[in-house]
Amino acid sequence: MSKVLVDPAALEEAATWLEVHSSSSGSAEAFAAEALREAIAQPAEAEEVSNARLMNTLAELARRAPLRTLHTICETQHQLSTVKLERYLETIGDTLAGYAFTLRIDFNKLSAALSAVTAERDRLRDAAGKAIAWLDAEQNGSGVGINRRIKLCRDAENSLRAAMAAKEA
Image 1 (tube, rainbow, N blue to C red):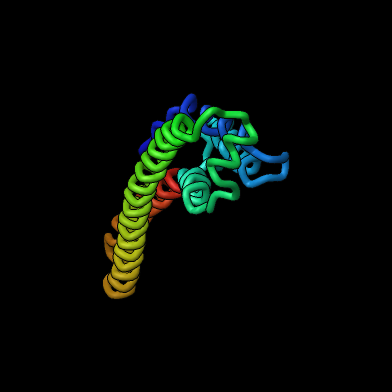
Image 2: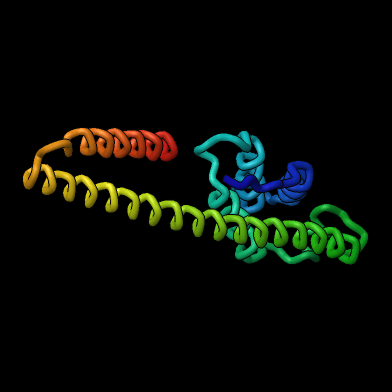
């Protein structure tokens, strides 16, 4: 499985900025900051943490329409001009867009790899089932010396199933 490298410091900076510029604790900015902090706090190796969840959070942030204009934000925060804030927002937006793009690419690669592994697993199960059916038919026909081959094939099938079950877990 491939791992996605995310800079937690940049995400924390974005979350802090969103939190500082939120109008209240229930605002969209505060919600977005909390969602980013939850994604940052999760361990990278945890199975429950999916790239899709972080990607969806970032995509939702990118789609969210601003609730306040830059001028209003600057007046509220007593900033001198919107130019400095625009530059700051632009770098954060570019960083978040880069993360979302990278996560989308990695998610697509993982989805394609999962589809390939699933197709191969199904093909192997089908081939093992056909081999067992052929051996059963062969045993019913001659029965002499075939029992050993059947046992070997069933042992191989059981080993394959155990390996696939371990891989899926």
